[in-house]
Image (tube, rainbow, N blue to C red; front, top):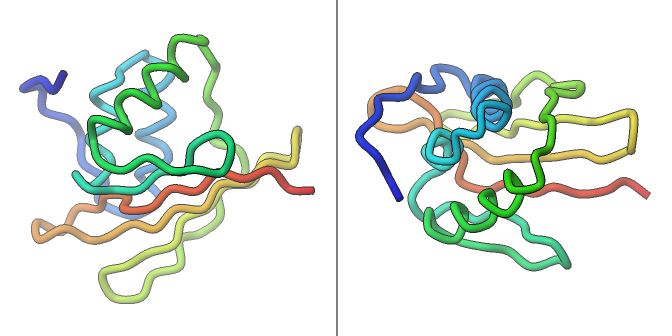
Length: 121
């Protein structure tokens, strides 16, 4: 459930991944969810997707319940075109990669609107 806590905003697109990792490792589910636009789309296991904060919250609650250790991997420089940015991370240990699309908000901060995790292969 959302809370009234004030979270550090992403001032640059690549801040999103850093904040996500920090909050995930702190088991801060709401802190993770607020990094996404309210109607963001996030990939789900099996090739599907989830949309919106409630579904994203359920997805990451299940992830956090497994007590993973999040790491930043090899973050690539964001590719920015106006108010849209492509962010991406590659993990050499298992060949997985993540690509996200972020949008600059009216206050100048950034939120993810699309998040796609994939395994290279």
